[in-house]
Image (cartoon, rainbow over all chains, first blue to last red):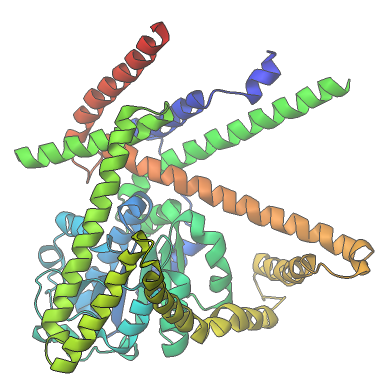
Length: 282
Length: 240
C-alpha cells in the first residue's frame, strides 16, 4: 500500500488517539490562546443587562445530562448574571424544565452555587424552582394558560405554590416577561415559539448546542428569537464578559486544538485523494 | 473533606465514562456493561419522575372533586392502554391512545405553526434592508440572504423544461453553492458540539474545578485497567 493510500485509510483508532492527545494536552497545559468576543455572546450579555426592572423571567432547563458538557457552563454563567441583578432590579426568576433530566442538572448547579449565601436571594420570594413539566409541547401550552395547575408544587421544597409569595401574581404566560431556554432539542425553540412567543408575545432567548445553530439562525434573523448563545465557544466569551471565567473558558484551548485536528485530517485526506487521482490519470 | 460515598460516586462516574469511550477501541464487554446499565438507569429515572408527577397532580388537583377524580382515572386508563402494544389480541386498543396523543400534538402545533415557521419567516425576508447604514458587513450579509433564499427555493422547483435552460441553470448552480455553504456551517457546528461533549468529560476526568479533583487519580487507574484488559483480550483471542 502506497503512502497516499495509507493517508486515505488511517485506522480510526489512531484518529481517536490523536483526538485524545489534542484535547487533553491543552487541558493539562493551558495555551492561553486569545479569545475574541463574538457578536452573539455580546448580544446575549446586553440583552440580559437590558431586562427591565420588576420582570418575571422563566429559565427553562431543556436539556439532560448528556448536554451538560456544552450547555452547563452557559447555564452557570446565566444564573450568576440573573441572581447577581435579582435584588437590585427586582427580577423574579422561575426555573423549570421540559426535559425530565433538567432538574437533575439544576441540582448539580445548586450543589456548586448557594444563591442565598452568595447573592442574598430568598427562595420563594426572589426565585423558585418548579421542576419538570411533562407533556412536551402540550405541557408547554398547558403551562402557558395555567401555571399553578400544571405545577401544583415546587421542586426543591415540595410545597404548594400558594405558600410562595413570588407566585402570587404569576398564573399564566401573560404574567411572564422573558423566557430563557437552554436546550439541546425537542421540546425547544419551535415549541416555545408556537406556544408562548406567538400566542402571548413573550420574548425569548435561547442558549443551545452548536449543532442546533443552523436551524435557529433564521429565527434570530427574523427577530422572533431575541438572542442566541451558541455552544461552548460563545459560553466562554460570555464568561469573560461577566469577568467570571469558568469551565467554558478552561475548555476553549481544547476547542481550538480539536478543530485544528479536524482541519489537519481534512487536509490530509484531500491532499492524498487529489494526489492519488493525479497519479492515476498520469 | 470528601466522604466515602462521594468518592465511590466519583470512581463510578469515571468508570462509566471510560467504559463508554472504550468503544473507540472496539466492541468490548466494558462498553456493553456501561451501555446496559445506562439504559436501565435512564428508564428508571424517567419512570420515577413520571410517577412522582402523577402523584403530585392527584394530591393537589384531581382528587379535590368527584368529577376530577373520574377524569383522572379515565386519563390513567388511556395511559395504561399504551401497554396493549405488546399483545397481538389488544393491539388495536394501543391505537386509541396513540390517536389522542398524535391528534392533540398536531392540533397544538398547527394552531400557530403557519405563523411562526412560515408567514413570519416570509415577512422577515420581505422586510430585509439591503443597505444598513454604517455596517457594510451586515449590508453584504442581507444582500446575500435576499439572493440566496429565492435561489434555493427555486432549486426545489422540479417541474417544467425551464429547469435545464438559462437563467434557471445558473440559479440552480448558485443554489447548490449556497446549500453547500450551509452544510459546511452545519458540519463545523457539529464538530464543535461533538468535541465540546468530549472536552466536558475530559475536564471531569482531569478533575478541573468545579469537578471533583479525586477524578484524576480514578482516571489514571481505571484507564490503565480498561486498556490492559482490552489488549489482553485481543491478545488471548489471537492466540486461540
